[in-house]
Image (cartoon, rainbow, N blue to C red; front, side, top):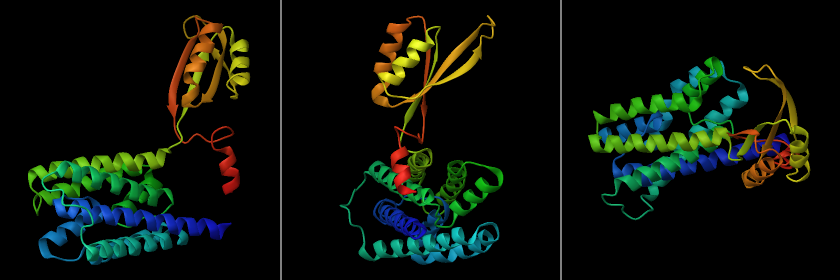
Length: 289
């Protein structure tokens, strides 16, 4: 089972680097967009000195790897080396093939969107599988492990610094703005991979008819219910608070059912991400583990 997990990690990290390499060569390079982190540095070296992006990506990451080795486990470190070589190979491969997409001309906004989406999906997939491709992700993961700084925030700051530096190297102010737009799109896509794509809704219901409402949720919506003890801050009245997690399709049914039982009830609904457990992803998790 561990061998299968490792195979999945290696496979999806490779897929992630392919997506990043494709986006960099087919969107960023033709449009003259800047990128952040080591990828951005490779673009600076490419435009300023003509150094191949795959080669420069490999060389820049060597000193960062030496630092990372001291703080990471052997498995994570080896996955990082794999990710760096995979990204370098992907960049070199797409650089060799040349642009595969039709010339977007002056539509730099479309290039920025394409670059942002491909980078976000690629890097998000890599991080989700506990891999890195070196560069800013190494520093971001270290800050996450040592100081609990969210990876996407560190990634955003580091990449923004490199993009701003690119303005003084090869990027026009207009292109720099579009590069920041691409960075924002990439960070939002990465954040989705961290939060999870299985969205549920956390519902808290305050009602004197909590027993009937609980029964309705369990029998009609087929969802579990937790009763929590609550005390009114002003009235000091003790109440039972209903807590349940539902999916998007059940929101209207829940609202209608609760309103029919107790029109005076108070209902709070909020998003919850990476919803795990029976009825959401419980069965799938059992099969994977």
